[in-house]
Length: 377
Image (cartoon, rainbow, N blue to C red; front, side):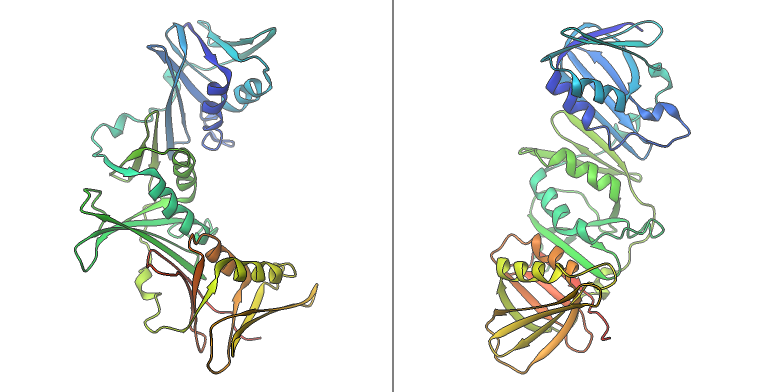
């Protein structure tokens, strides 16, 4: 079908760029390397999918002839990126051959018929949506995603667990959990009386899907719409709809990991301990990534030893006046856990006798990260 439109280069480039992390690079279906472009009512719709994730986004354009075509996402992105004009003319003919023009540059590339493109949002019509501030969801993702497992074989840990629960006061809380078996990050927020999804059993959002959710909501200041139905999560903004297939697996009972007894509690300045840990990490490697933390009267001493690199030692002042205790942790895990804290102070519970350490906010219970200690050498 013949199609022709004119669009601002910046809008077109933004729309195509959003699809690049979704389209399949290696696939038995070549059309999944393509994006579907459809015109109607002075808008273009850009659609991308890898079958597990689907994206539909609308952009303003001057549509001269309505129609649709699919074209290589990567090649089209590279063309638009290198064009220097502010306006792009896009046209496809009856043979699905695409012509892209701006100023004096003319590109011609083959496309494929839109009829061959998988349907993306047909099964989303019966999803019930609920309003929520996109920044709140982004905050939950930021405070947990670093702890996801990178092991593709453990698909239930290769994502985040998302649930809603009633607390003791009857308020609804959204909870997001991530763990790789060595650490567990948990963030939650109070929804008050606001109507929202019922997720008592929880859902697992896969790593790639989580990245796409974060990508489309990170610059959105208004509320977004969230819905879950039959193994999929759907996110809607004013101009974009994202469908993510959920992980069909059982998530471990994270409550069993939360220590029943408090460790030795010390409150420290976030920036001070973060910089001290980063100084320790300078000599760390994949084989040697530990830091020994010792609390003694009025100070916290940090020590790292790497036979391949050398040694590091630092100390910071803390309000601690009790017997000396020591524990070892992966220095990167501590940095990851502390970096996402927004408050100026950090509460560090150091486990005694090979019990896990806990990093928390100072002043609220919206976040915690549990980190297993390193075994003594």
